[in-house]
Amino acid sequence: MKLGAFSVSLTVKDINKSKTFYEDLGFQVLGGDIAQNWLILKNEGCVIGLFQGMFEKNILTFNPGWNQNADSLDSFSDIRDLQKQLKAKGVKMLTEADESSEGPASFTIEDPDGNPILVDQHV
Image 1 (cartoon, rainbow, N blue to C red):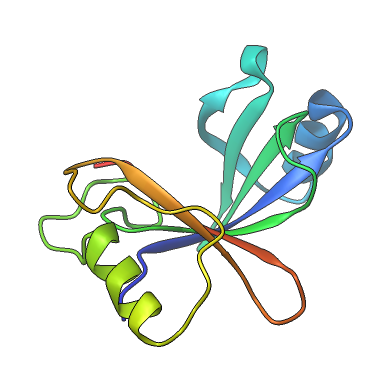
Image 2: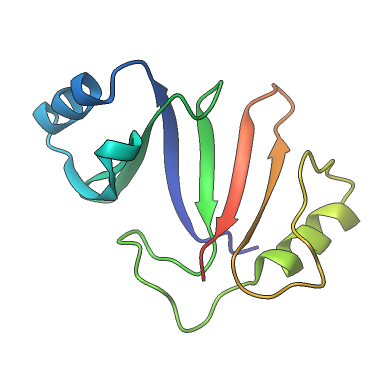
């Protein structure tokens, strides 16, 4: 199963302080909008998202259709196909992608310990 680019989405209290902290660790801004309280940062192959006031918990995030630089891929597993495969394996969906749609969509699941996992396709 190919889930796409991986990142950790961190819920932060002060996005400016968090940005400075992670920049001190060598991360550089890859995308996002600090005025909207979200940024994507990268250090080599590691990608993190900083989100202020958007989520209750940190989230493991996968982006089908993207590589680790948020570049669109020519070939990838569509989110609706991934969702069908997981449902067939008995994975409980917290939110679901509309299987009759095309293009961008997302679904959410949890691992056995309650860690949220967002699968979010942007293309």
